[in-house]
Image (cartoon, rainbow, N blue to C red; front, side):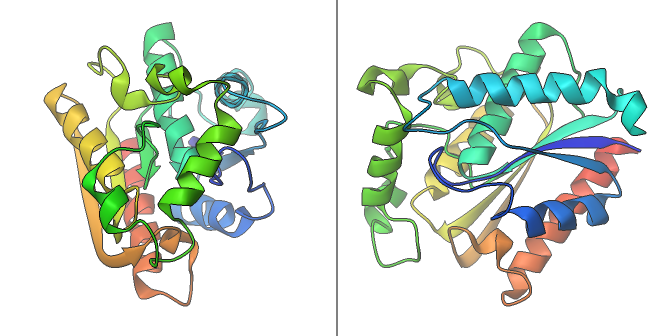
Length: 236
């Protein structure tokens, strides 16, 4: 079977394998793939780039041990939401640069693509639209990054990578009413400009973290099914 490295959200500070277990299990069942849910180190105890190093090491471990796990080392993808999507995007770039593994798909659900915290959505949805506010993003950034200038490092802000050419094909999902909406939209556009195949999906009226709100929110299930279908096409 194919394999997916999954990186949970939580602003690089909170969240765990347990908080995102349901999403990981749905991903496993829906894609019919082996899913490795990665317990990466987080701030403030472990500042950037510890999470990046752990995430890429985990991806390498999945590939190196794929056959013993019953998976195909030639059919590997990455998936993440929010901070996890940030890590998925970064490891996709690291994998491209290393020449291995050759990822079939990077699945990015409302990714943090720019820790400068810029974009109109930061003003429009700063507060009053669910659990993620602009102030919360400032808090996450300050607990994750060692210094303000780390936001200019593409391993923290993948949209600042000098070159996106040749990175794995992507599906990018955003929620309309989310401070991170523009981060995802801008990253999808940047990937397209670099010639990377991108499936961009915006969910109107949705807030941050909606992807995990199954079964209460219909579009949460619709978005998860969209991701599953994208992986099945990529692995075919």
